[in-house]
Image (cartoon, rainbow, N blue to C red; front, side):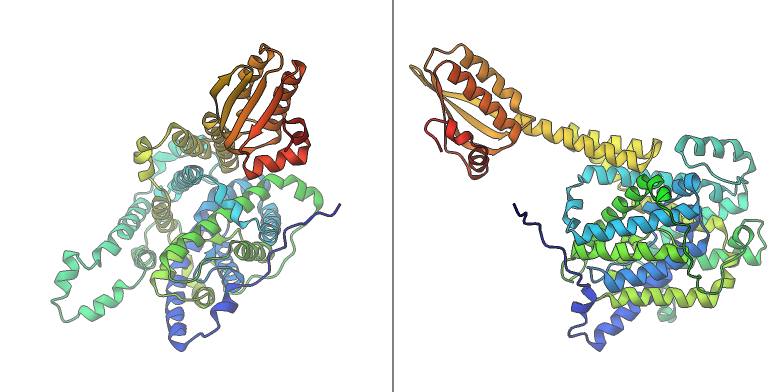
Length: 547
């Protein structure tokens, strides 16, 4: 017997479609947007890598290589790929437990899984993850990112931060007396500046209105276009360098950033290692798929470009993650903050993503020696700001408007993400979603009496008769065990939406109970799905009359 398998997804990057009818005007917009987001990506890429327990160049070259591949091969027009805050906790835990070499193998393996997910058209399945679970683990990750930055924000002399929540709190508490006030001042000024800068230049701000009356307004307005993280990075680095503040920098901890492209290296690969890394690999693949497709949906809502192709996007993410480990990179995915910046800067096609990668490469190769002066406290401030924007904190206040099921899934996922890890949190969230869905659907199913005329009894079925609702058939079966011989039971199935094999088994037991007492079972008004299953199983011949 042959099986009709669904066709594989075709490999069609969005870039090919966007280049048809491409104009010089669009090129100008894409170059401007790409250069802007490339500058924004500079501090973020370094900060993500350092927070993940890696060297800053790992984040930079991941943003360059993965950003280029995702733009060229992806299924969206304006999405920007690269290292993301959501990966920090996961990557740090993998490095802590398995080492950097095994992180590279897990990342490459996750890339293969992502490509296969797209190839086999599994992109749409990511949408089945409940929004309460997504919000729960996103907020949990934001808390963990903020906690992980306390060492550098406070300038504490801690050689290595542990990976788990309670040990991190204990470690910070034991070293709090070593607080470096200069580092804390730089980090605090960074956070405050990141909040104030965009509001300072908003159209309705008093500061902006006063500047409108000055002759130097055009020059000042030019500075307003600079991204806040770049302004914070440059000004606070200069302040720390000129004042010779006693704070830890990229140079003192990592020795600076190499001014040359990374060399191609092969990780020490073996099947035994891959088997050991199954859980980290699955975690990176699932999180990468969720993050990239959520980002693509945000891009669809904010831009006028065609809707994204989820399968092509997963294949592009897979290629990027399979390639970057060979250059010492870290996991990459779609990044919401940089994608939104790209859209607001006027991007129209994946060319903006290509320009973003090229801009970042030029900056890194030309200005790498200057990066050694960047205080780690400033990068910690940038990440604290990212963590704050990453979390959907208003959802906690809105919990009272939702059902207990929604509250349970969101809060439990949030707490388990913080206390244990993201893998357990997502697993728990999905299990709870499944259990609560089954319970809700089972509550919908009903068996209502309609009429009783002598030995003919009529009942009506409502909802879905599946494994979670079969218990509601048991009372009817028990009633038929004591019914008069020759009873004819009619089930009105016009309101029966669906039927599974467990529900079918319950109906067969009901029919057998009636048959033992010379009775018979009829079903009327069957919809397409229940009727198809009943006929394919052979149960139709046992009904009266046969179907």
